Length: 466
Ligand code: ARG
Image (cartoon, rainbow, N blue to C red):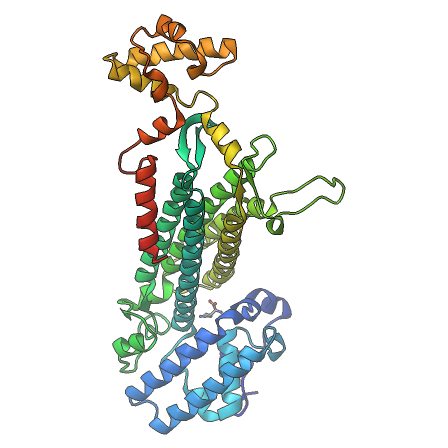
């Protein structure tokens, strides 16, 4: 039976004698998840209607009616709590067309002229990804602002610097906060770079060869906020690089958040005891009354795993696909949505965590001094006395051994003992071994000297307009 008067269930029934198997529909239908593109699908459809009018395919009056119906459809779609799977529509594009035909009859069926779901979905997904990138970038800024506030609060607080998680050299806590700020700054600009390459419009590529109607693709691209049309129709419908790049940028950002989370987990242990997190971002134990667990930070670590998984899933989906569209590409959406959603939650909670951190300045200072963190400073002092650095390194190593054996710090060793191993030491050495001197000496671009950190903080603040 042919069905030309009513809204069709599928967009391709004509050639088929029987409908799809229920199991086929279970694997093939994407409406349950591509419903998230409904806004973009309507936006793209409105622009397409205008483009068809410019091409002389639709009359001005027809475009006005299509536009009105699509605007009403958007309101209806936004009011729905869940994807309208009872509609029987295979995907979001089918649903929009079904509704349009139900509202406008034959005119609704004209909208798909010269268009394919292949260029439609590629366009929808670019529009969605572009908006999501903008949201994540704004959230990264918020987290950067939280780190600036932390650096401000702790501008004079010394903090232990580690390599191999062993005490290395003291830094300022503000320097540590700004280190994470820098990583996030790269994440933000990486997203912006991905956005710039993404911002081209595939619509008008049609199924694969380009539309057969005289569409002004430049004007169409502009209507949808794109910089230009995609230059090749095959590539326009086959390319998912924009999604891969967005996922890649998300994965790198998630890794940065996992490192930040991991540091806070360690520093908040009883053994380190340098920071306490706000109750609101931690949890207790159902059995151990004393527990305060850093769940938010653990999830920053944990979510990185799934976001990396999302990236890998789409990389593998795209690998080896022949041009142009293949149904495999329908699998692009869930990992993309998942990664951008979860990164958003992570960024927002990370800002909350940072704002709620209270650092124990006494313990931070003690930790910054511990573990012979001024040993390099003593070696540098000896270099200043004319000792070659390798010899100075050797002499200080011996002094560390001596201090360890006595259970004291380097600056606790009497001058005579210092001289026994490092004959160039003079009485002024003790001034050089203080925390303040050690910090002040790192007075280079990017160093932890207090003046440098203040300048870096001012730069960070002005960069963000914070
Ligand atoms: N639901 C499909 C997807 O997300 C839309 C494109 C369908 N194209 C096709 N030729 N069957 O990829």
